[in-house]
Image 1: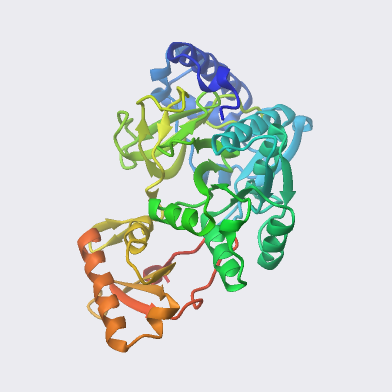
Image 2 (image 1 turned 180 degrees about the vertical axis):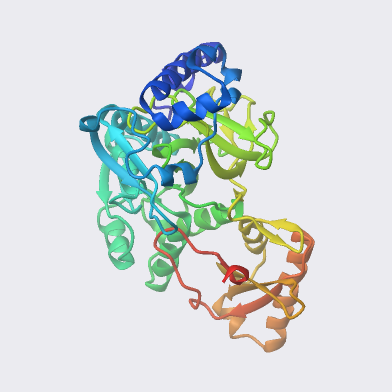
Length: 433
């Protein structure tokens, strides 16, 4: 389903013209109203009048998460404070939280972006959406809620946690669509199996999952356990929340709402813009934001852009699903490793559960050592010790082949790795402790 064909199927030249007009307006606003950006542009010797074409965006300054923290709480506000109707922010687990302030028009645009997102996953006004993203200052719950309401679907605002109740409501209210983190979707499936609930017999036939990187094999695991179609969605608090990009029925890259958010891919080391199809760091400029608009925000997410036409009919550029984040990437003895690489390889090995933790530490020789703790299915764990050893050796061999580094594997009993109702914590890096 395409929610807004005029925007999502716009002819390429018309979209570029719209993006340029909005970019010019944005730069003028930021230069006039936000001292932080005026100082940044002055330092680079660029003025609003210097922006003549989309390629001129590379003359403008980047924005980083540290910039947002240093300007907490209202330093990046680009409109009068009395126009702000809603505020969201990151969890703030390290330093000051990241704040996003919304005017009523920003909320309306967010509703539109999320309606497109859920529609990409097949949501219609006939659906019952069980929304298990967290509410409050986190953007996940409110964003999915706004989008479902805009479509006209019925929303169950469950938030995260209380899994027994989640499963009861899923059965009693006949939920047809699930929205949450992929790791929580798997945890719910695990608890459903333990309670004797066959999810495949329920109406829940589709889900939109995001807020953390997840592999193609994790998608297959979710789809198998629920008997559903699982769609990847993407967003971040700094830009607007969820609704920046989304998968359609083709499940071949995430369509970017390009009329609202201008994407770039840069070399994370040099900041140089990379061509379409080359992997690098994702950068977004908010083209319509009024409250706290951002220029060239460095997301730290690693992906690449896809320009080829999509079978769904949308003409927007797509981004490949995330490979990981620059700040999540582990450098082990000079080799770059993303947790998603480990997850993808692990899910192909029979006998393991989709639950794991990566522990990185310094060994006796001050060399990096990696321990991969993996849950084993009940029938395997209760099997003979020699079979467990065969499984452990197989996992180590697969990891050596895929990652080009040695990984020590520790097999643990089912349900011994801590579950998360939000974003899963997959890495414990003791080198920095």
